[in-house]
Image (cartoon, rainbow, N blue to C red; front, side):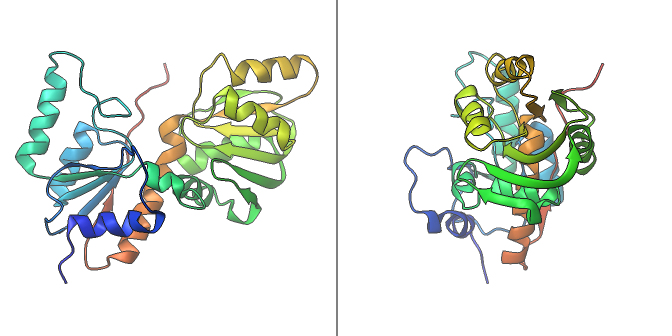
Length: 263
């Protein structure tokens, strides 16, 4: 049975209804094209698009934008990097669909669920909120949690604030760019959390709150793991789900290497 690009998009989005002003649109390709292979990635890098083409995928589903802006703006003036990336996409004919807003609107949030599952913490979930999850861990220190994250997510380092030997039980998780003070600080207080783990956020907001909390003897702890590191497991989870849904179509997950190296 022929499956089109639009069939895949409908399958992923229809149950949630229409989202106004969404970034989740088909960025290239034709909705009527028959899908012969699906690649899934967190970030549609130049190398990721090349890899998808090499694998024979003619549909790439990605979480973040193509051109270094949430809204895919390309008003950077003359830019050979963007021009070359556009040429690769056009010449290959690959369809690229961004799956960001809808995946975050799933309940539980698809990105969050992928991270929690990757960490092996499904049985420890106390509550899945629309933009956060609360976990109750069985007797781990903050350092043991950090080591667990590095091991499970295959990352070289995390950023930490607090006492590494502190026993943490109530842990809050915020994926992606949900580490802002307006989100993370009430999250700490309203749910009596020992530790918050998030992807990224302004450094002058939540970290400074945690610093003052520690100075006042409150011993709160914070783990910052990186935007991609917190969200990529959710796209790997999506690839697994797509393969179950469309067993006749090969589905490939393409991981992204970290942008940064330790020096």
